Length: 308
Image 1 (cartoon, one colour):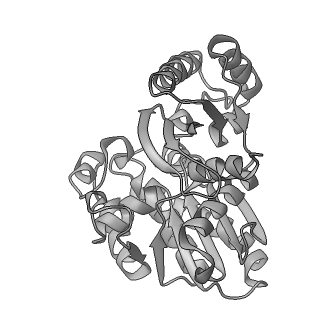
Image 2 (cartoon, rainbow, N blue to C red; image 1 turned 180 degrees about the vertical axis):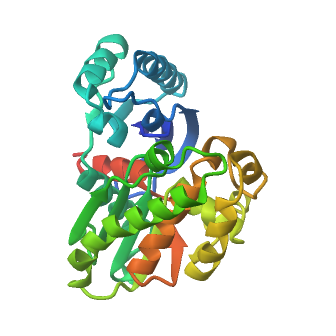
């Protein structure tokens, strides 16, 4: 069957169309995305602006039309931290449902972490052993650890690259003091949960998912996306530590010139790098593998698991 997963995230609205059957690997058929950066469209009261809601409704309309054009039998629409944490989130959901007929399922942060973990486990297989999975989104950081398909522990922290950029790094390039202050705050937040994971022992493999980790790995020398999904890509803490001060000294325009960095994500890359560096350091990770599957694939896999 042809499924579409509609991901209303903090950075993008992304429709992923796959051909999927229970027991088989979902095969991507089409991808459609629009960058909204909802995490940066909040007013001082934490609400998504009227203009932001209008853009969101129009973008979902367009994505649903694409799904219809591509022959999608069923669309799985969900939303993450930007709508989950917006003070007018319920109003936004009602308006989206009224104007597009899309009933967005709002995932909790723990849901995000668990579904992303499921995707990583299915991609890497049982031989990967105990997995530690890190995912940096636009609004939050998800961390999950476990031996099975459902992690033993999963947490979500408000440390997304878009959120931190909008709230803590206003300059372009940012002021050095702003970078230092954000670095301290990020590390303090992550340090609060490290003990929740350390009691389960050392992971056999550490995985990074999301656009942020993919771009950081690429600028650190990993293979291009054009070389295919199945090429192993890694990010070392040593390389990341070398890149963080370089990114801090660059403007968003200068970062776009780096390999694999998109214009829409260039401004957020430093905040994402600070989160990645802190997580790898505090969890004692020297090297992590980039997993091409993440939350969207996890949603699809869970749906397939529940088909009769």
